[in-house]
Image (cartoon, rainbow, N blue to C red; front, side):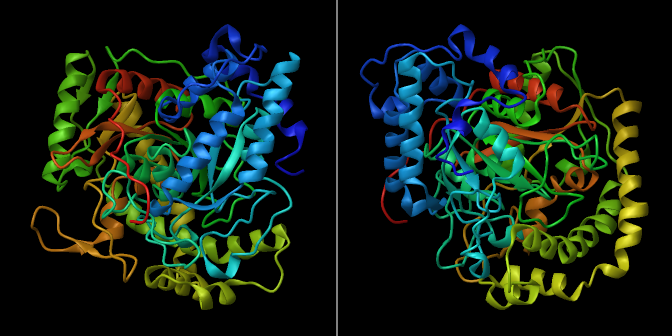
Length: 522
């Protein structure tokens, strides 16, 4: 079914009823439209605010969509988007307005524009994975988790840029049709990755919300670098513990991959989560009395400018009555080193070809993808995938080391009576772009240079590997104006409580000021 199908926008899926309470009594009601608000006001609307404005008649869906598409054109220099569906998105918005004018009952997210990372299948646009060999792949169906949002009334504005094949944390994409994505707070710096396009687009007011995917931190890293909120949901054992359906996505690892919502506020992340999961809408959790572990190994060695922001956030938490427990995750780093990459690299060897077959892609396999990879860093990763260099270590990684990680986390939370673990989402602020190699080494506070990728994913990779849920919210800005993310990981299945804690943290710490945007080329 194409994105222009009226059925997609006007029939609610499981979970739609759950999000309606956040929007108040106007959800689903038709009202007469009045002249639209100024474009400058539209751009600052959160997803929740935009839905309220459309439902109350203060804003037409088509006017809002027109404003965002114009913003996408102005912000083209960020290279946050790979493709825009101008005609389809506008047509869908007009149908929402027409249905509302008739007095039809609409689903809770009717008219909400979203951007979708370009490894998530869409039936109306190609799914390229940001890599040349897959540029013309056109799935015939939407990914099921995306379909839930579309059934709830959301509209895909376009496909967001990403680190090529999701094998990286910067979105320095050297594919000619994708380009190097840039951070809206400082265009000389990376937006993070691999969902950097979604992070940059949401921060740049191209859309109020969007979808990324997370294998080792790819939702939370760009959310942190771009000053927005994000959720990596529970994956756990991959069965009943998995919060979202993971099919219909160009994969790296079925054990580790998950779709994740990203938005400017945690309330908007929760709004998307309810529609995607079919679970009740998460509510704020009082901070007084919550217990958060502070694992030293996630804090040690962090950049001074990051720690300065995080220490202020910790003090605000203490003042709000939260209990911060200084207790480390002993042995976790060693287990992560044994489990993380063997699982990802071996499963990519199996999972990427399986996805291509299921999506109906013919004549393209791992070798063909590798031959056209644009980024030197991604080429190295894909060579390891093609050769299955991790195959010999996979059985121990999946059968011994990952289960030990899961048990370590369970014990850490249970034995210390913790609601979660608190740490900087990334130990550094957004690094400067390396436009030649797609990656670079960085020096943290003048110390010996280290590889960028492991430095960026250090804090997000363990939880991803173990399959536990994690959130990130903005903690503040460095003295140089770069966003710093505050992360909380929690036990498997604690997603709703984490979202509630995130809302409370957001109320405590406040939202970041918008980036000082300027249109045109970078």
